Image (cartoon, rainbow, N blue to C red; front, side, top):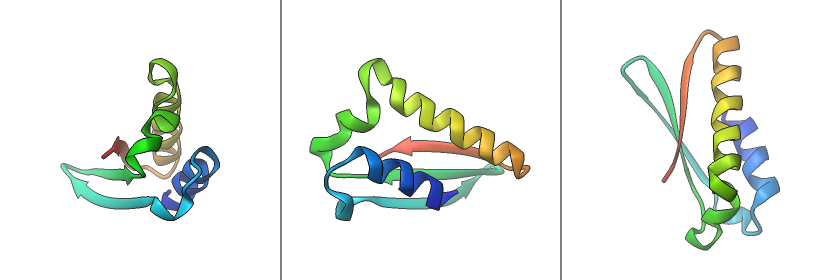
Length: 75
């Protein structure tokens, strides 16, 4: 899952070295926190949050395919 998120995020931002993805488990969920250069948050969020929502939807679908509950946060 982390590789998929990294690939998506790298395609959206300019500063690829500033990407950090951390995973933790809470209440039976895998929670991925994405940290990037704060100047590029808008590229991940998108207009009206559509890009971030699409990333979250894709992550949940991939997690469900593996039998996991997945959540993505922008931190």
